[in-house]
Image (cartoon, rainbow, N blue to C red; front, side, top):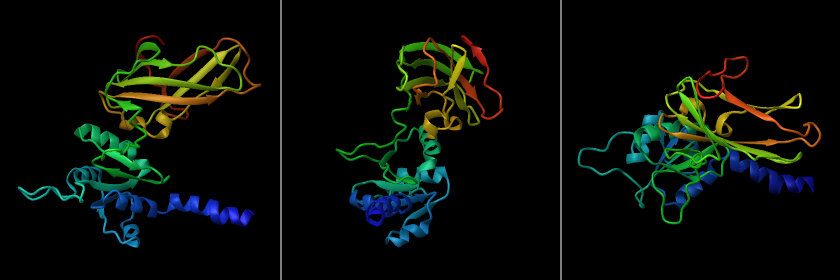
Length: 268
């Protein structure tokens, strides 16, 4: 039974996440055409009979998605695309934050059309009718102001503003606490900060420190003019937290023993 489970369950599941084959199959089903590879070995494409274009920088990737070539098309010539007028690129999943920031700065749309692989994703410059953008950042990064349940105006070092949060007014032990923090980016943050959440009450503290946006969008990629929704889930133990009222403290710090960002406007 263990052997059958490994052969027919575990091994195929692992193969989907370490092999590029599924992404190439999806790319072909979506129409094929020009294919770029960013943070992916070009030799992998040849295994499946594809001639991918190796891209070495974010500007090259953006240029490729926009026009189907790492180099601009000749004067008067249209971009080289597939039969459906689309270009595709397989990129490392860990590059999504940097890609999103570059696309925002350029005002250029892009779409995630396959996210079935844990290590790599398939991007395209267009969506066809009936297709869905699978980009996990779409719900969490926006140029539109959010509507938090509890509005705030707290600015950290004049670079990022906490504009509000959502949290339940009460919760029972054994439940999951979902808290959303809404930020407005005023200036580039430059480095990667973490978010601390401390819940203090009845002489005890429980902790919700975490990487922003589930680690998918580090603060070094936050662009001025955008709103970031940081959604964090915290299990509340059945026995360890005392009943009563808790006060929430939050802020940003550089990690470890690094300094916290100071509050320059608003309540501390």
